[in-house]
Each structure stands twice: as C-alpha cells, then as structure tokens.
Length: 219
Length: 319
Image (cartoon, rainbow over all chains, first blue to last red; front, top):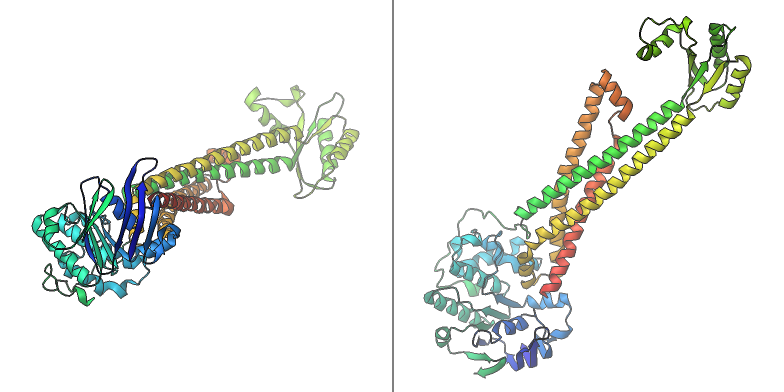
C-alpha cells in the first residue's frame, strides 16, 4: 500500500530531518509511530499524507510514484487517506454533520445520498446528540471524535492520526484507541503518531520509532 | 455502513426526528467580519466611482448644450451714426437677415429693451436718445442649417453702414476649450478613481481571504481539487462584490435620480434656472445609468478575480 525506499527529507538548506527511511505499510495493518518530540513524526505523517515531497528516495502509494503525480492526482489519491490532526481542523462555521460530510461533499456526491451514512457514523462515535452543534461549542473530546469521523467517512484505505489522544483524558484516550482498532478490523490500515507509551502498551501492534531522523521498526 | 452500527460511544441512535437545520452551508463563511468589511469597501468605492462617472457625464452634456445653444444664435449690432435714422436702420437690417436662407427667427430689441439691458450699469430712468447706444438684433439660426455668415455680414454692411454681425466664434472657441479641459480633468479623475477602486478592492479581498486560509487548507486535506476550491471562493467573492457594488451603485443611481427630480421640480425658480443653465438637466441619461451598471460588474469581477488569484497562491504554499 505504502512503500518508502531510502527516503530523506530536509527543509530548505537545513539538515536532513528524516534519513534513509525504508519501510512498508501493508493493507489492514496497524502501527504506532513514535519517538521523542522533534524526531520527525509530523514530517513523516506529512510525507504519508502527500503534503510534502521527499528530497531524496522513492515513495510509492497505492502503486503510484508520488514524485510524478499531478496536483489533481494527489487530490484524488488523498481521498483514499484519512487524516486526524492534533488540532482537529474543523470548520467553525459548519455544523458537526457538515464537517464530517465534507470529504463526501468535495467528491461531488449529492447531499441526500450520504445523509444517513453520516448520521449513522456520528451516532457510532457518540455525537448523535451534537449533529447540528458548531465546533466552537463542542468539548475537546467531541471535536476529536468529529475529526476522526471526518477522516473515516469516505472509508479510506489508510488512516493517519497525529497525537489523537493528546487533548483528551486517559479514559477517552482508551476509548478512541478502541475506535481505531475497530476501524482497523473493518479493513483500514492505521498509523497513529503518539508519544503516549501508556496508550501503546494497551495494544500489541507494530511500532515505528523515529530517533534522530532514522526509523527503527519493532514488529 | 453496517460497520458503524454498534459503538461504545453510542449504544442507541439518538437522532432527533426534527428535520436537520443545516445540510450544505456554504464552504466559505458568508457573514464573516472581513466579508462584511469587503462589502462596505466595495460599496463605498463603487459609490464614489459612480459619482465621478456621473459628474463627467453631466459636465460633458452641459458643455455640449451650451455650445449648441450659443452656436445657434448670432447678434447684429447697429451702431448709431450721425445723420442716420437708427430705427430705420434696425428695420432694414432685420429685413435683410429675415430674408437670408437658414434663419429661423429675428428679434430686434426695442429701445426700452436696450435700456433694460443697460440698467445694471447705468441705473433706471435712462433715456437712450441722449446716448449713442447701439441696438441689437438677436438672430436664431434654423436647426440643422448652416447659413453663410460671412456673406450675410457683407450684405448687412453694404445695406446698413453701421451694422456689425457677431457670430460669437471667439466665445464658442473659449467655451469649447474650457469644456474640453473640464471633461479631460473629469476623465483623469475617473481613471484615478477606478484605479483606486481596483486597488482597494484587491487589498480588501486579500484581507478577507487571509481569514479563510483554514478553509482552504481543510478542503485541500479532504481531497478537494484546486479547481473546486478556487471556484467556491470565486463564486463567494463574486457575490460579495455584486452585493457591495449593487449597494454603492444603487445609492449613486438614487442620488442622480433625486437630483434630476429636484432639478425638474425647482427648474422654474430663478436659482433653478441658473443651475439648469450651468449643469443642464442633472440627468445622466440611459448611458450614464448603463455606465454605473458596467462599473458594478467590473468591480465584482475584480473581486472574484483577486480571490481566485489569492486562492491559487495559497494552494501553492500548502502543497
């Protein structure tokens, strides 16, 4: 699904922040991406999300060499990837329902065709009572769940989450982890970037550990 | 979506049966502070640009009316000479002019009318017999006719020795120069006004766009293609531009309509006549209103174009 070969990344003329990354993300797999702050977790997520291009090496996603993709092709490929940002990035002027439905709306699907689907998912993540609420009135945990629902509504093949439990209490963190596990069981490959060791200890999964820009894999 | 039917977050569906209130809110927030500020800037600039356009049209129309009024009138002056009957000379000159082709009307001023003309300078109770005051004959030229004025002048001189024909050529030339200058200055001011409008609208649009950067980023991350994002922003800003333009242009149109109505209403008073003589009817006509509409469309177009350029630049930076 995703293949990195000797990938390196630097910003401008600065030092390499990621060096010689070689790994694969297989379909239906689950992995934690971890490492100390500043190790390059977010940069690696951005490479996976196609919002950065490597300065060297080869990345293929879903069989495409990302270096040769046009902007439209990147947008099309991105529809197969869901991402949960640490700061949620919900649109404040749209209801929870509209935020979650956004990926389907940009695909050009008519609203009536996805209404039941979105409401069902919102119920599933426990936001059934908050469907028409605007993000500014949602709690941190509710925003997090709305962001996750938006990331999975289009049934992506790959789900990326950046510190998804960073803004919630441990109990909600555990419940969110179980949500990701359920999504993984339904066929989505999951990459969770976190430095919450307690969270990782709750689920036996592959760990990708970044240290000084290099990747160590513990299967 | 059967995978999502059971969750510990939501043991049972809790959706209200009430129809949901918001399904497809515009992707770009409609009533943001920056959006309202942009509408205000566009409205004010369109109003000022429309006033300038109307002003140029009014001056141009008034100058053209003055020229045609003056050009359709010539004056014959009969200078008194010793040993000649002035009244007979006036009658003879009037007869010569009346029979000349292309003349619509001839009106010799009587002694009393001539005295009235001099009243502001010489006071009332004047007896013209005591002074060698010339007499005037006002000659109206037929509409569309171009009489041979040098020939008429020669005929008058031959038959009435003291007659002088004044076709106001020098005055018309000076007026033409003055009105051309006024129009040129008006067009220069209009060009500056349009440039200032375009620049203000451009910067106000960029300001409004800056507050929408998050929207662009989120749309980008959920897989929206650049064209989809750009079209949504362009449509949104075109509507804002049209709204501001309609407010500003509409206010200007109302003001011109009001001025035309008041000018018509007060036209019969002395002040109204002076104003009408100076500025014409105060009506900018169909052409003027069309120019205001074109300005509104132009400014809305500039707003939409600027937003598209800014979206494209933003998309370049987040790629």
